[in-house]
Image (cartoon, rainbow, N blue to C red; front, side, top):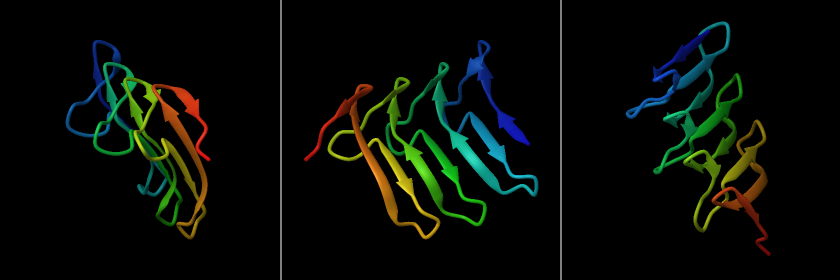
Length: 99
């Protein structure tokens, strides 16, 4: 099951996720925020995938379709208990080394 929002034939929604996918029983599996066909959200993750029993599996922070986040990881992976298992830093789509 899906909920999708389009404008000019591309994913687009200004006040909520433009793409929401559900598990068969209606629990949210993924949600993605798009503006004019590009993953984009300025105040949180642009894409989140959820474990079936709740909690984020991973989050992507994107601006204008590119992984980007200032001072924090733009991609975060979680185990089912909510512990961070992977972090990656990006600026305008380019990977950054953080040591």
